[in-house]
Length: 246
Image 1 (cartoon, one colour):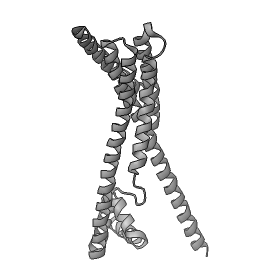
Image 2: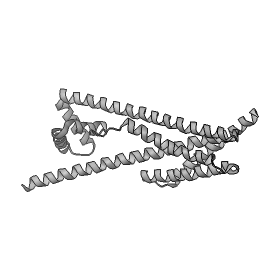
Image 3: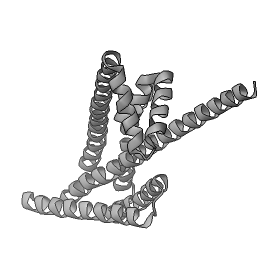
C-alpha cells in the first residue's frame, strides 16, 4: 500500500513539475517575442520617421508617414509571425502523424529506436531499454515525440495568438518614436526622437537580457548602436533627397 501511495505521489509531483516547466517556458517565449516585436517597432518606425523628417518639416507629412509605418509594420509583423508559426505547427503535426503510423506498423523497431535514443544520452543499455518500455507502455507517441522530434504533445504554438502578440508589440514599440517626433517640441523634434528611442531601447534591451538570463550591457549597446546607425543613415538620405527636390 505504501509503495502504491509513493508511486502515486511521485507521479503527481512529476506531472506538476512538467506543467510548471511548460507554463514557464511558454510564458518566457511570449515575453521574448513581445520584446523583440517592440524592438522592431521602435527601430523600423524611428528609421522611417527620421528619413522623412530629414526630407521635410511638414507636420502632416511626418504624421501620416509615421501612422502608415506603424500600421503597415504591425500588419506585416503579424502576418509573418502567423505564417511562420503555422508552418511550424503543420510540420510538427505531419511529423507526429508519421510517427503514429510507424508505431502502429513496426512497434518493436520503434521500441528499440527509443531505447537507442536514451542510450545515447548516457544510460546503460539495460536502463535505456527499461525506460523505453515503461514510457512506451504509458504513452508511446508522447515518448517518441519528445525524444526523437523534440515536440511536446498538446503544446503547439497558436498562430493566431502569435500574430496578435506580434501586432500589439510592434504597434506599442512604433508608437513611441511617432509620439516623440510629432510632439509640440518642434524645434527639438530630432533630438527628442533620438532620446526617446535610446531610452526605449535601453528598456527593451534590459528586459530581453533578463528574460534570457544574460548580462544586459551588450544587448543594450547593440540595440542603441544599430538604432543610431539606422536613424542617422535614413536622416542623411532624407536630407539629400529633400534638398535635391527643393
